[in-house]
Image 1 (spheres, rainbow, N blue to C red):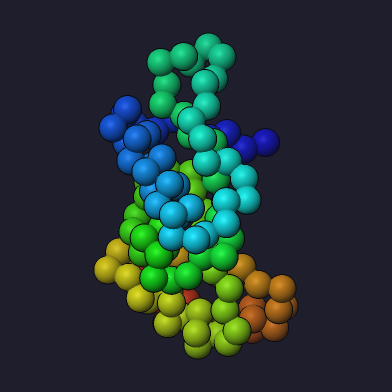
Image 2 (cartoon, rainbow, N blue to C red):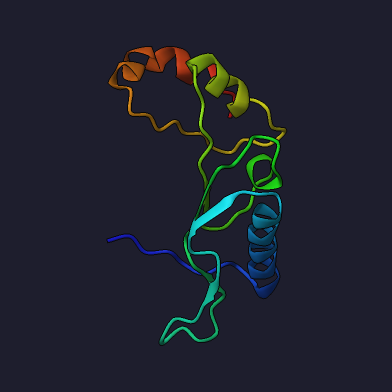
Length: 118
């Protein structure tokens, strides 16, 4: 089981929700989540549902900025070099990850680790 805690403040919760709205406005597809949620026993908490977007492009606000909330943006890539270029195309970068169906990508993991600047 995975637990998701609250946002740190009302202001941050509102910021997260504004990013979710920006993602929808820019054309990303909201797959799940995206709303404020009330949690029994934690009525004073600032909870946002875990949120997943698909059809995200790397130039969208939700892809370029640190949201500091439970929002995941899935961006497709065709070639490994394209994925690395997109991962490095941000002034931010606290963390990075690559998900793939290509099991051979793990053989290239060392190159990816060294190439992604986060």
